[in-house]
Image (cartoon, rainbow, N blue to C red; front, side, top):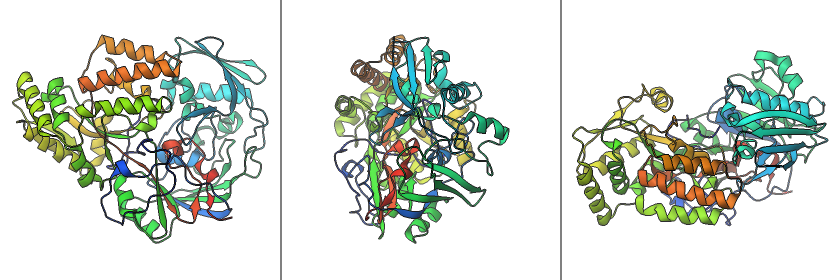
Length: 547
């Protein structure tokens, strides 16, 4: 899908961006409990290459997967497991670039046509050959309106088998992000026979997988554990780790399991989990690029409906204080609503543009910032009713909500906090009625594509995620143009212009980007540290540091 929200309490999915991507290796310099500076963390898309084999690794998830059928249940827990089992037509790399994969070659005879040449010699785990028929069937399944990935296919006019090993996809208009979608769940190639044989039970405990990846599903004991085993007949490079056993725990239980050695690793979804584990003997931490951010998402009621009030709040917000008090320094004040892991191309240009926007979203407000903010409030006219801030009781969101109230007070406005249970908070994202009583949400977000344009369609006049009702015909035209621009250089220029328009209107108010944190037994290495772990077979690269 183009856009996602986190569902774990108080957590954003992953990763600060490629601020210092040339650096490599773990950063374990800070002791447990000490505040760190996310802007100074050593960032790397990957960990050092593994040198030796490992018989078994115990891995932690924050939740048990709902299903291993990502067409029907696209949870991050299921994705972390299944990305080692199932392969995609394109593959997201640890550095967040995208390359053809099961589609060995792709050509574009014209801007509205994509021809995929299917890789030969690939076999599913049952030994059968992966064919163009499986590819076409899988694409059509993904595109079904009842499936999670159907929104990726709205611009597709036809999908046909045009050769023994060839599938051709045609579009209504040129589609710049479609191949990036094929590196996500929209590109998974299922074994048609196995899926149809399992029927409605596909993806549930007791059913085999229907994939071609380096690991096969060896067992799933509901409520206890899930096991993957390296597939002996894998068509590609054989993994060093023979078996991965997944269990699930959250909060203190997850931290304790890693501290005591009961588990070997996790991709820490919560920045506070990462902060609690820093400096733990026997564990290393690695940080990598991500698209994830913390944001304030205004609604179409109350004082924040005026863009001048939104800009004033952005200028007055103490992002550095939020990072320190709410997340142990593990998040970085940020000026755009999408993390730098989205820079899968034109990295230098996007980095420069983000820095230019920092004046609209300062880490800590200066006297000049507050003066400008008060001026904007005077121009707009101060709202008489308090601005209602929606949150749950998690540490990070509570700190954000208090910081928003303090920022409003600094510029002569009133704020009140509405705290709801986490289950009700999650409804704010999807149900307009649920958020009818709030003016702004202390939210978190990530996108599944390494392209900023995977986010900025949220500002379109008809977007369901444009809660504040921002309408700008020029913005809409620019977004549609960028989404139809296949050339990366041209699209980057358009995206930077769109980003500036989004920031000027403060459609959302960015707060911080959050590191992707890989916590790992210090005798292990090889796995990517970036958000790619959701779509790349990370366990296949995992192994021992020493041969």
